[in-house]
Length: 178
View (cartoon, one colour):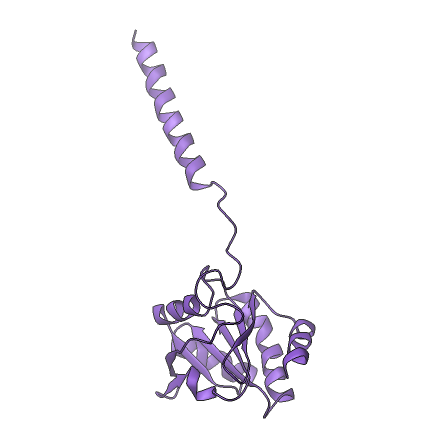
């Protein structure tokens, strides 16, 4: 009888652990495509207001009337780090025709150090949970980084991209809208 109880207890605990592990590692739906929650292509761009490294404010409306490439990133995000030179090149190559704007979900000091290291000169704002809320409003309900959005001069979202963007991809998109 004692062996049977021990066997049943081990079986129940094993079943519970197996069910718990299966539930925790179950495959869910993939990340929703850009724009399934929040703004999507064809929508008017939402507003945002985030602090800069210079203790000022950066607003989406600061760039009204000109195309804007908005990039959400973080210093701890490897794909974000790889694409920053691509965005800087776009800022330089399309100076006067395109505003490249970064919004970092990070602490100010690592952002400042990283921007100096890479020579990033376009405007960058910094925040935490407020940046996550802005990303959702701009169509990134999954919170994926990096996340890039192209807004035309009329404030209409023309392109949304999850993940790292290459120079070729970016130039193809910008070629269509600039």
